[in-house]
Image: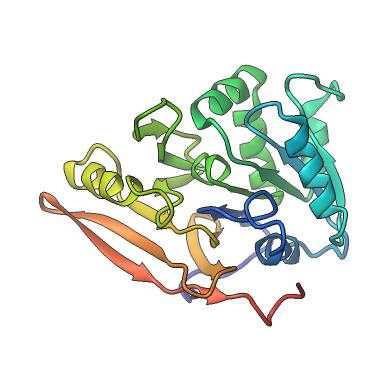
Length: 245
């Protein structure tokens, strides 16, 4: 799926928001991760992984997956930082890839370290921002999150992209009715929902393309219509056969 109204210029930042998937959810299916790498003009882009928490095994899985792909992999831990100048480090990357986890805690930590401003600067300077779940909704003005145990709630996010987002639309039973209810009531802005295996590719603030690593996965545009939510299906471009496995 391509939005022909959006044109790609070198001055427009790129964001790839995945409803789910990538190396941590589809370790045997690298299609979405290869798609992210393909957006860089470099043959071996520098990729930095950020995770919401501090799980050594998550870093290990990142290196195991991206070590097999054409890139230069690195990570940034805010719990055990290995670099003093975080701004220069992130601005020196070509891709910043954010994992899943507790979005509310992640954003609070980012703001404490100034990453909210650094990541916006990186985006405006051409660093590709990508991620799944928490690493997808964080770029929008609002997201639907399970950061509070037992509940799905709206959360104010970074606002690089206007509107709202909801991940895991097909795999977690409460996601679709909750997102529709929140949009219908005006508690959350109109936005996009994505199934696991679906990535929304934005250039600037415009949705440029929707792709998937799974043949039957879908994305949705969900908007308020009176006191209801209107949901429009977006069929992605299935990546199999287009990118190497």
